Length: 144
Image (cartoon, rainbow, N blue to C red):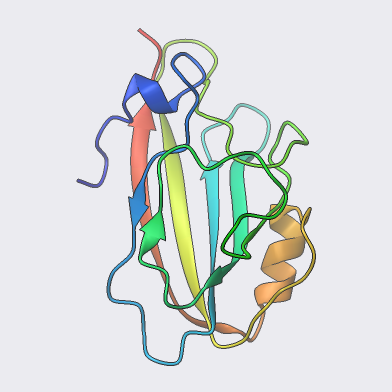
């Protein structure tokens, strides 16, 4: 459910696992998918928690606990998160005010994008002119 609280298991306060994601309604003609997870409520700038691209167009989701590898078994690549590491980095907002975590999925008419290690900014430049559709899910998390 959009706006739901992200379980602690998927945060830096828990196991810091990437959450399982399922994709449906992928448009016909999708060659590949890309995903960016970001925190627009971070104090100084939008903080990037996850960048994944070159996900096969026929994928139906990502499993829980995607390893922090630059290249995944299905050929997907992971970019650099805000900690300058590959893979997912779970929510860890400062203070006690809940933050929004936006998971944005892009369906692309072309693929692949490139080698692993792209930043979210570099990925978005590479997406220009390739996006068929996009969708987003927003979860929230605040420390008790």
